[in-house]
Length: 129
Ligand code: HEC
Ligand code: HEC
Ligand code: HEC
Ligand code: HEC
Image 1: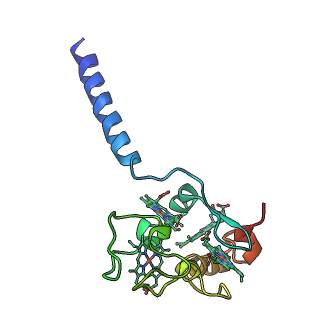
Image 2: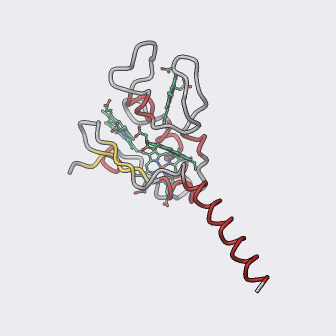
């Protein structure tokens, strides 16, 4: 009797912890639809599983436009054209015009060289509906 109540209390506490942790995890997938050459579907779960850390993509707050949360949608700050006081436009937040370097592409090129299936071609990320 007593043991099962302890179990119930522990179970409830674990449940609360799981709910609190889940609160920040955005639901998969996130579809970004701003690029004229097609929408990009991004999956947090696959990236975290592949070993990516939040801070690999979500940089620390910068003075030109301070963050309101530890992880925030890039679109809140990186727009086309860039907002007043900002220089990194929407595309540049993810990759340079030829998609040879940048947040998404630099890691993918490294991963692909190591034999992983990380996409490096335009049409592998940008899909027209
Ligand atoms: C590989 C890159 C990458 C990693 C790693 C990553 N994120 Fe993200 N995250 C993104 C992108 C891309 C978006 C969408 C940005 C947009 O729509 O402008 C995003 C959006 C978000 C959002 C906002 C969701 C929304 O719809 O407003 C939250 C919250 C977030 N991420 C939390 C996290 C947390 C927590 C981690 C670590 C567990 C993490 N991210 C790891 C790339 C990443
Ligand atoms: C709260 C606002 C904010 C959010 C959210 C945000 N950024 Fe930034 N970002 C900035 C500011 C401010 C700068 C520096 C000024 C500039 O370059 O325009 C910057 C610069 C950058 C740069 C230029 C690199 C450098 O070191 O100068 C890249 C790349 C970048 N951000 C990518 C991202 C990505 C990818 C996301 C989403 C996962 C993101 N940012 C989310 C505000 C933000
Ligand atoms: C730290 C390294 C890293 C960064 C940064 C990164 N990726 Fe990836 N990405 C990977 C790896 C590794 C895979 C292969 C994962 C697998 O095969 O399960 C992958 C796979 C993918 C895939 C194919 C799998 C799928 O979900 O359909 C897409 C699309 C993708 N990434 C988009 C992005 C975008 C968009 C960004 C930038 C916001 C990004 N990635 C940033 C490492 C990274
Ligand atoms: C690893 C995935 C990935 C690859 C590879 C990639 N892109 Fe992107 N690209 C993105 C993401 C994510 C965005 C932001 C999408 C959004 O805002 O809806 C983006 C944004 C863009 C934009 C900007 C849209 C705007 O509003 O400013 C253009 C244009 C673009 N990409 C063209 C290309 C071209 C051309 C290539 C190949 C040379 C390429 N991309 C390769 C992920 C990728």
